[in-house]
Figure (cartoon, protein in one colour):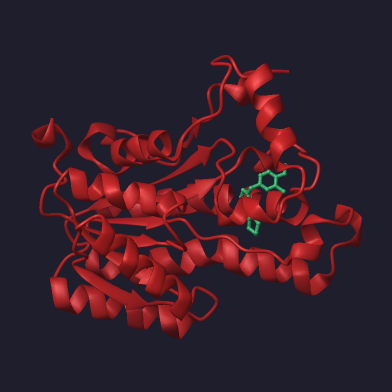
Length: 259
Ligand code: 1JT
């Protein structure tokens, strides 16, 4: 299986670990399992501390850990040049970053402020574009970029609001990037994860209701796990998906097919 994946010894950058519940952490653990070199970026000092604790607890060693604020072009540029110059080549990137102001997920969407809208777009959608641009010069052997999306990108889900619009932009950006980077042998895809209890989900008062609705309605009659998102992410990062780019792959127990 490891031979089929071709991820052993490959340099994969993982962005967006806030703690052990993060989708990005699940993906990172699976990357370690298949023998990849894992490079982490973090924004806040608090996330770095949590990341280092998680690595120690799981007896894992990061290839590199680099500070990166996705709201700043210079920060992204510096992070990727540091990684690229140190390791030579980058083979994959996991973009698992999103943020919006709490009030924009509480009030009606129509109340979204100009600045709240711009902030969600900047952090959650444009960050993929800037990341792809800075990673590209070092992805000299081709590779795979994945990002995390959610069903709210294409359906109206009460409360998802400004994040839904940002995820729509993220998915469209992913397709345009797939077209640009394809000639360099770089694939770009999105994994649309079903609802997972992470730090991001914490501020969502209706999250329990969302989870029980999925149990009722999804073809598999259950919610999905972080490990299931991680497994599909490995597929999308690996040679197993060599013919797939510009695609949104659902890991949601089939929920999105239902009317
Ligand atoms: C963010 C947050 C991005 C929560 C997110 C997210 N992507 C998925 N979730 C969980 C979620 C949230 C809502 C929801 C369904 C799932 C919070 C911080 C900003 C980034 O409603 C249907 C609101």
